[in-house]
Amino acid sequence: MNLIVVKDYEAMSRKAADIFSALLTLKRDCVLGLATGSTPVGMYKELQRRNRNGEISFKDVKTVNLDEYYPISPDNEQSYRHFMNENLFNHVDINLSNTHVLNGLAEDPDKECAEYDALIDSLGGIDLQVLGIGRNGHIGFNEPDEFLVPVTHKTKLTESTIEANSRFFASLDEVPRYSLTMGMGSILKARKIIILVSGKEKKEAARRMMEGVLDTRCPASFLSLHPDVTVIATEDAV
Ligand code: GLP
Image (cartoon, rainbow, N blue to C red; front, side, top):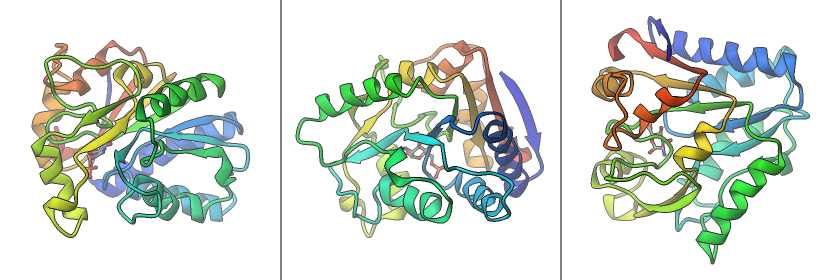
């Protein structure tokens, strides 16, 4: 893994936006794999700014998001569809019909997940995937477990993730207990991956991710199997 250490959150966000901007310049119709959580918010803001300035365009871009709570309505303010609209899509020149987020209300979640993997394949695969990391080493909603699932699937959230994500909900009880998430194999198929790590509470997860050992109890450690992963970490996270 290629490691870039930067001073703070703003520097991390700019560095990540640089990598996105370079791809958008080289390939206007690229496929972006996007993530939610608080970590990429600064990068999305910076991309909005560059789009307003005319430095980059999303006109021909297609996006696929990593994951979504289940069940949740796309209109719910805590849904990842809502997050993406608010943090990026509503503020750039992207065609909303080119943006894809798993349907948190799908009647048949297994079918929804299988169709999502087929959709990614039909788009030609992901050119650049951005990831955050959970405090327990999860990526997307691939939680630490005895085994990991390669394809997009429905999964149960761990208590640690429910607790960490409850800060966005009115109460712990309102956090959905399940999610739909791209699997480890779906993520590892992306041609290039960047993972953003910010803050000292991510230090232990970052250490385990970069240890060079594959551990299903730290799903992010499987990124070491990928030939083109760049970790952009703040000083206090490494
Ligand atoms: C959620 C998301 C992950 C994200 C993680 C970390 O569980 N499903 O994709 O990486 O939270 O979030 P944060 O960046 O807020 O620490």
